[in-house]
Length: 487
Image 1 (tube, rainbow, N blue to C red):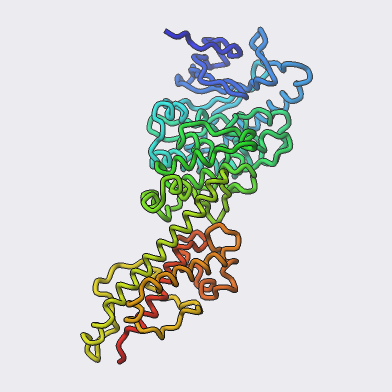
Image 2: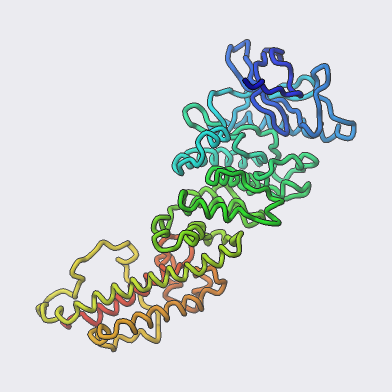
């Protein structure tokens, strides 16, 4: 039978703090100790957080907390004042997913927060017991926490110590963000306390005394929490990532288990450069809640496994994401070109099926008949129900007879594929596999004018597949014009 854990700096259990009788140590962090206590007045259990930063202070024989040396006295006192301010800030919150502070008091030369205590377990315990949680379960934990964190940021505070052990899951599954001992005002001084970080979850700017910290810093830490959940490993610390970044490869390996929008959002949050991350919770939450453009199963059916993993975490236009592994970047670009080449082939084959019906259509239709329609109409997306004018093109003339085109399908298919591939490559100036509004401006006036309609997934850019769909629509429109009997 294992011996119970002993915490050398903790107060003696069964001792009292005012009306609170200490019963157990719930946890120890870089900024203090959290106890389970019994409120003798209200006869209920509470959690009490004691300010005791391990790098700055120790427990004296009389139970008081004192700085480790006179050189640390100012930093300790500054931290205690920030701890008091944190308690006052949290006491103003009435958010179901942020820990609620009911009282603050000072004793033993330090400060204490009294909080509600609830049964449950930490996310860290859950992930150890049940690794790789299902994505719907993970979202049910994450999204409420983001709402709570947004409320904290609205008060100009940062948490600065988000990690799985500081996320508590109540018995009913509802999450709550704990331990704001590292919380600091946005843009405020951080002094020596900045050095207290949790490797893997702390962003690079938190390692430096003059690091520019903001909501993007907490977003990095929350991205680390998601990384831990989807890979079953702790994220590599920011310092080691600057030398050899393996985060992208680990996320790529999770592509078959989790959706592309979620993995893209994690990769975005874990950008080492703070300006490349989401700048607000709202911005990041929108990316997490985005619907996948191409389901992972569909991507896997087209691409080999390693390329499918890369495609699943392809960047979004709102925040371009460079590959953290150069080989993965090149493989993803190559397979994207193959993917839209196949899409163009499918579009051309669709047109060939129309052409084969052309010789019989005029003879079967009376003089007053409607324009020729496909023999088996299929439901089309809303984009296809709104015709788009064709772009000027060297091959746009409808002079060739459809039956002549039918007799040489291979050359027609090859010309179509080559032309569209060439025009896409020429317009894609930054080589990211997508066309931005700036890249189509002046080159494709119709696409520029109808950009929002052609951009079917609404991500602010035109993919190769979306361009091939547009060209298919334009070919279809020309075919109808050529095959339609005269009135």
